[in-house]
Length: 412
Ligand SMILES: C[S@@+](CC[C@H](N)C(=O)[O-])C[C@H]1O[C@@H](n2cnc3c(N)ncnc32)[C@H](O)[C@@H]1O
Image 1 (cartoon, rainbow, N blue to C red):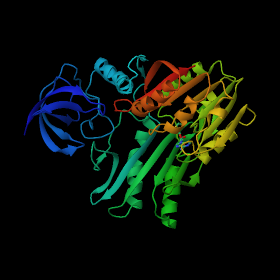
Image 2 (tube, rainbow, N blue to C red):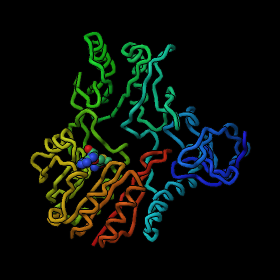
Image 3 (tube, helix red, strand yellow):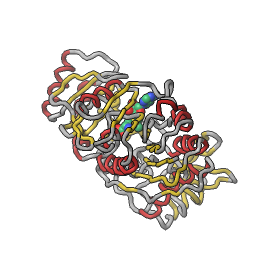
Image 4 (tube, rainbow, N blue to C red):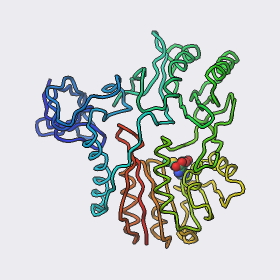
C-alpha cells in the first residue's frame, strides 16, 4: 500500500497528497499528515484513496469528538484544529471568488455556530438480517453508518434515533430501505418517513402509537411528497418572532443559531428598504426579518411553504407569490419596483434570476447561499451588470462538514 504526504485540504474536505505526480484525495487527513493509503479508484481524473494508517500527524491535527468520525460521511473535519479549520472554511469562499475573477472581494471572519444545533436532518435506514441500520451514509459510499451518537444534531433528534430504529424494525420488510427526515420545531419533532409504499392498517396503528409514545408533533409518510398521517400539534417555528406552522418536509435553515446569524446580516442590509423582495423565500426566514415598516413580497416555487408564510403573516405588510424562478425569473422591470432584493436559492444557485437582477436598477441586493461555487458564478453575473460587492460573510452552520453558508451584499 502506498504512503503519501498530505499537503493541502481540498474544497470537499479531503486531504490531498501526491501519488507519482498525480493528486490523490484522502478523506480524514490534513496537511502535514503522513499516511498509508488504499487506492479506491479514480473520479474525474483524480485518484481517490482511503486512510489505512496514520504514520505521522500534521501539527493541526486534534482528536475527533465523535466515535463515528472516520466512517460517517456527515462530518469530515473534526480532526482539524480550530484555527486551521477557520482558515480552510474561509478559504472556500475566497477560492470560489478568485476562480471567477473576484479575488478583490474581502471575505469576513467566519461566523461560527455551536455543536448540537442542527435541527433538520435526513437519515437513511435499511433493514438487514441483524436488525435496522440507521444513520448517515459513509463518505463516498452508500453503506449506512449506524449512528449511536452525533455531536452535530439537536439532542432531541439524537434521542429519537433508537426508537426510530426499533419502529422501522417492525415496519420495514427484509431488505427494505427508507429515508427519514426529522425536524425539530418549537412545538415538537416533525418526522417524515419517505416511503413510496402504501400504508396498511397495522402500520398505521404502529405509527400512531409511536407518535403518541414519543410525543411527536407530526408524523408523515410518502414519497416523493409527504402526507401527514398523525398531527398531534401543528409543527410551528417562530421566524423573527412570527409563528409559522410549517408544512411537512419544509425547508428551514439548518440551525437556530445559523438562522439568527443570517437574519442579522440580511436584516442589517435590508434596514433602509421600504419595498423588499424575498426570492426563494421558503417559509419566510428573511421576509419576516425585513424591517416592520417595509412592504415585503415573498416568492418561492413551493406552494406549501408559500401558503404557510401567507397564513402566518396575515395582517402584516406581506404578499406572497408561488413561482418557478428558474423558468420564470422575476424580470428587471419588476425588480425595479423594489429598494432591496434578497435571494437565497438552492445549491444549484440562481443563474437565470441573477441575470435579471444584473439588468435591473435595484439599489441593494443581498445574496444568501449554501454553495460558494454557484454563488461566485452568480456574483460574477451581478458584478458584470455593474453591481459592487465589497464583502462576503461566511456562516458556519454546517459544522465539521464541507458545506458553508454565506451572505453577500451588492449595491449600485
Ligand atoms: C435554500 S432554501 C431558502 C429558503 C428560505 N430563504 C429560508 O431561508 O428559509 C431555497 C428555497 O428555494 C426554493 N426553490 C427551489 N427551486 C426553486 C425555483 N425554481 N423557483 C423558486 N423557488 C425555488 C425552495 O422551495 C426553497 O424554499
